Amino acid sequence: MTLRKPLVCVNGQIQQIQPGDTLDITGEGSVTLTNNEATSLVICTPVYIDAADGVKKAKADASGTMKVFGLVKSASIEPSASGEIQVENVLTATTEQWDTVAGTTGGLTAGTTYYLSATIAGEITATAPTTTAQYVVPVGVAISTTELKINISAFGGILL
Image (tube, rainbow, N blue to C red; front, top):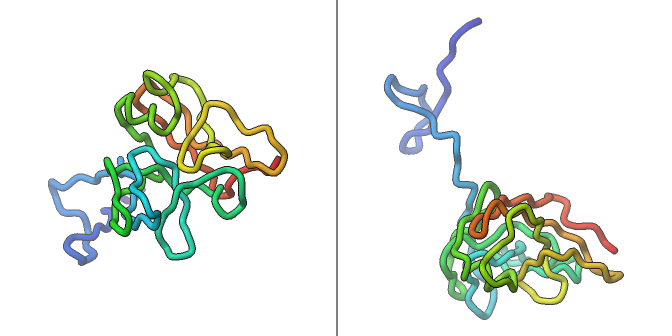
């Protein structure tokens, strides 16, 4: 078997990895996007990509708002400002920050699957929607009271 050197991008230039360099394969799993809401987006808020190429609070009651793209990673993103959206891996926040978007006390419950709320935009819930014409959209599974392993489907949710 032939040993090959991977290509990397350094200052905009593609080159072979240099001796002594290492690859970072962990990846943060986040992107920077603009808040197109009239209000601030707080950390952990589930968002979708809107028609203006920014993000808005996701909600599981309509096909246009149920396709969760990610969760806000920045502490807060002001209207028309840009901030980080976590789209994969694990999002870590305080129990109080999770309480704000999950309607909980004491953070998340380890091992619990969280779904996009069909009743409140920008929130998640441990209870999947059961009402006709709402969508079941899994967002992730809690690892602890402060960590959620994001598990978002590229296809959105299941219509009830």
